[in-house]
Image (cartoon, rainbow, N blue to C red):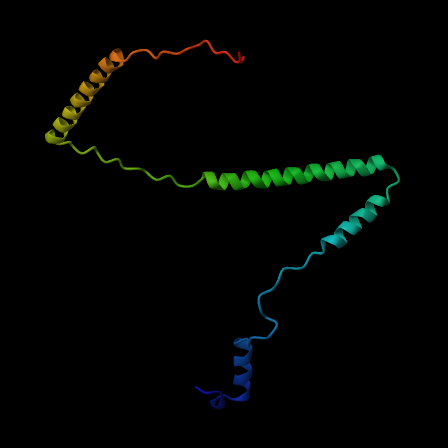
Length: 140
């Protein structure tokens, strides 16, 4: 039905039931924090103390609390990473090798062994190098 078919009371009810979008109803931005202003207020408070020992103790306690909070946040983050689900690995049995490939490998091993044995004899046949160790640096 169109709005013209409704009476004035029904139109008011439909307007109340169906909220109209306003220009300011967009996503809300988080409040802006001015760290410089907060730091200035903290410095003014600390300047109010007359003894530097009290100021030093307050600063040390603040640093300790800050370090504790940072370390606790880091440990919470690591715990979330540890609880990841583990997947089961299925291992396939090794495929049986064919007799031809095993025989081929055995033949290659035998030929390699013969070549190595032949190289041992080659080392025995070599003569030792002749080196003249008497070196004179003086000119005569």
